[in-house]
Image (cartoon, rainbow, N blue to C red; front, side):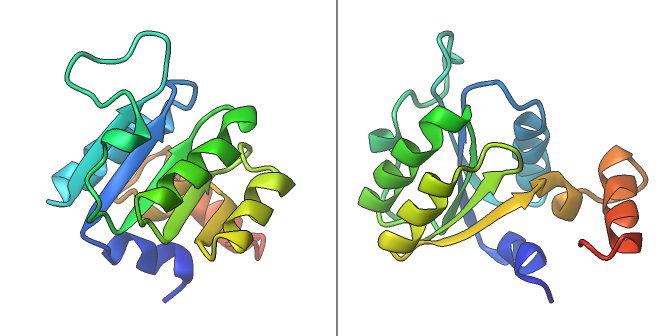
Length: 141
């Protein structure tokens, strides 16, 4: 099993979003559908009323995090997640930076980057599974 596939075997997930990545909502919905514990931190200018507004509000027993923020905010999120004891993260594709990946190494946080989480999480016939199939054909899965 690939690291990207086994990531979803965890039981609890922090989703860090600023609403700039539409796939984050799909990720939240799919994890909830699978019965996972999901904690959402909304760092946007207009956070949802029932959502956390700071990574520091997260409980300390979360297995891993999915980060879907603007590039300039990713590294700070990694530092804050590490303070909460989170040791695994997935940085949504096209939002990772060399600095964010280096910060994960420094903090000994397992990091998946350069891949769309929904490509590995989604089931059935949809744009995400078709994307996964195409990437497999190209040998970049």
